[in-house]
Image 1 (cartoon, one colour):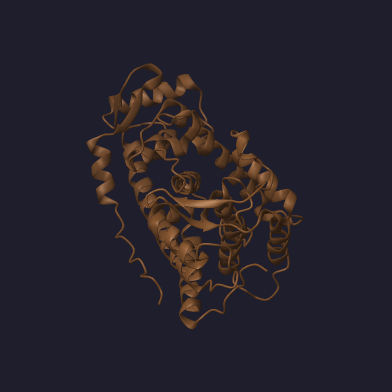
Image 2 (tube, helix red, strand yellow):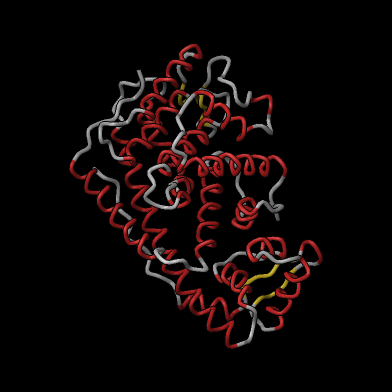
Length: 373
């Protein structure tokens, strides 16, 4: 027996309708091909990688998250952290590739392969294998065990039941709820020696992405979970009750996920509007100075506060290293970027011109929804 899906109360259905409404607005904003669309996908993907890994203590800068998304080398991250980040990037990339695969089925082989992909850098943690024995979740601040997973002998049967529930979901349960229950059950079964939280979040993203309503990169709530780690752990702790108890009420978890979806969708819509405004102003600026249109990619990233490197710029602009170097130097000469550092460590940041542009294009912050009763 695994955790069962609770009946939705009217207020829960109301939130789902509001999330759908925001998604409709987002689809409208992205309806026609826009040159900045790739930047939005890239930054959203990077934020999901960064958010999910920060929950486990693997913290990277926004620039290194972008570097991971681009397949570039890190600017600041150390070896173990970077291995965790790139492992998660590979797993999440694979998950998003499966979003429209008509032949895909959730299975033991899939989930174990995904785990190996995510943790292959640390073989002592048994990547790709079910945990060999008991497992405990420890709160390091309180110095106490806060959760004990089910006996290891139960893992194959419980995970099989979970996959069946995901493969044969014909009862009309909203995908947001099915994804949330997949996350909850996998993290409570805790089938692996390590990486269970990351695996559960990745699974939730896959279920959402296969819904097909939005581009797969825009389906995830991993960024929100990373920003609200304490609340995330608190609700899992409350529902779990310290040990494997699948008869517990999952409603608090469902409420938390509904709020996460509402707030993440509102944040993404805000960013979309801001990016379009920034891009429109930058186009005028670039044209007025006779600059090549491709430099828009560097200027847009800098305007949003990213540190620009030759490697990341040439990746997104699809130019050679010499061309990237000339472009960046041209932006410096035009007073649009400010350089710092030397040779391979050189970075470029926004000038006062770009900072002022960013302030002019700010969208009012969305009104985040408080926790449902």
